[in-house]
Length: 220
Image (cartoon, rainbow, N blue to C red; front, top):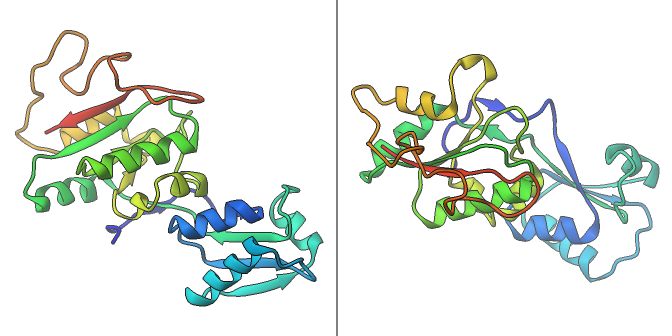
């Protein structure tokens, strides 16, 4: 399960709107907390699957008006079906380092910069899980956070790979904080321009899509 967390990515819950998005979120293991269904909704295959999943997972199933759904989703196209998901709980740096120590393997973290599409963040989290990585670090400003879309794209990996989003006031870069969290450990020397952590931008560590940026692996 997911390690201890310290703070949420938002002030409150967010909502996944639309029949296909809700069904996909349920299939992907997004931690849905409740399902909202419009009164007198037409029960097609997607609605039936969502209702069945809600029953199996013992999720609250609430019948509300279309006006309520419009308000909850800020006017998004919801097709009479909405899922509520909690604000993501980010891990702190200590949690990432403790997980790496307890794994008995060399620590592997991915530090992201400039990735603004949540789907790309979710894809990186999924890849980190596949490669046995111990966590992902993302900046709080000008970067995607772990939204429901990121959860869905991670295909369940977000429940196993902790993500840290350092407070801007913590000082220094995410990479610097990561290295400072390992007393007595020094950067591994690397090729010019790498800073000893990850590869230079454009050396194969890019994520395709909106707002891409280097995803640099840090081995400690």
